Length: 131
Length: 152
Image (cartoon, rainbow over all chains, first blue to last red; front, side, top):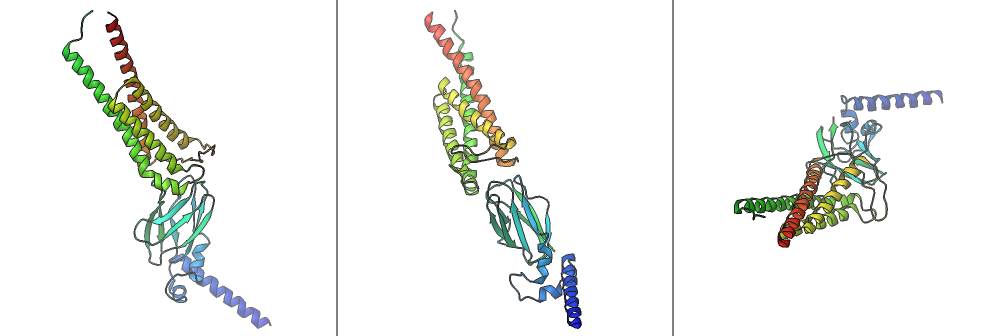
């Protein structure tokens, strides 16, 4: 019984270390290799998820956000008007969020700096950094 | 007492025509920007009549007022141009700085930022209002002058 508890504690510690390393942006191979290629919602990206929130207020996205590859990014819209978070180039991501609502999208898996905009309001621009 | 010299008449006519063209151009720029922005704003804010639809109505009014002042150049034409341009200018500045809630068919349109298209539109509206006001005063003077001459 006691050994089992120790084993589970050790497991939790290992998971925490693994996700912490991923959030730091250095030791990602373990986490990225765990899930198969494709949309990643596995253990690795969840470390970035906690802080991966774009808050839209007064028609502005705020400061550039840095997330782990494939992390789930939450968009919180504090405005009354609807907005989008749409990648400038390609179709890396495109999230629509209603006024006062929230939405989630998956960050690109390829590291880099992604400029994005609101398709409804041409004055809104932001940057998502994936690393 | 004495008739105006031909040179002065031509200058007055040219200035009047320039004023009409500039006023119309300002209104057309305002209309073009609103037509360009309307689809996005309608998708982003469809409450009430919808912000995009309001933009299209404003554009229609601006185009009609621009054509009116361009074709007629009368006092009434400048008055219409002035009202359209000034109302648009007041609206864009008010919704930039004051969080006006939705009322009647009008949705809440508070947008506390300036960006290129919006700035161009606001400048065109302001300039259009000033030009139309000048045209209105000039057209009034011309009408009064003609009235005074016809009395003699």
